[in-house]
Amino acid sequence: MSQNENIKKIELYLSSRFQLPPEQVAEMIPTFITTLKEHVVNLENALKSGSLVELGGSGHTIKGALLNLGLFESAEIALEIEKNGKAEDQGTDYQALVGKIKADLTPLFK
Image (cartoon, rainbow, N blue to C red):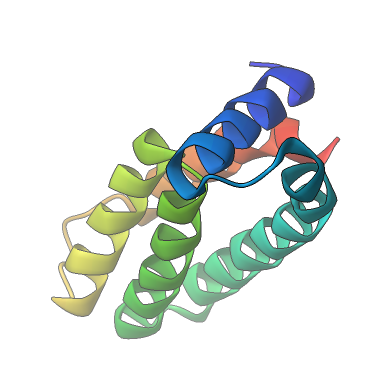
């Protein structure tokens, strides 16, 4: 999905879910995108740190941001990172999960 398609999807969700006027949503989008970029960096840093508990915490944080924007598929992946990280599950492929979130969100960042 292109940047414009992703942004339109978020705008529609915010407008309908929170009854926000389109102008207000348009003003908020750049801040949301910047915040998502920061959350992705934090997720990658937590992955590099090797601390599964830290990774689970970062998964929790980005999950909330994704849910607030109506990005439910990515939020499901973040939930998996959160739950498995906090449980210190060594069998989870966190690299693949973080990579999937990053791939899903990267079009927004262009």
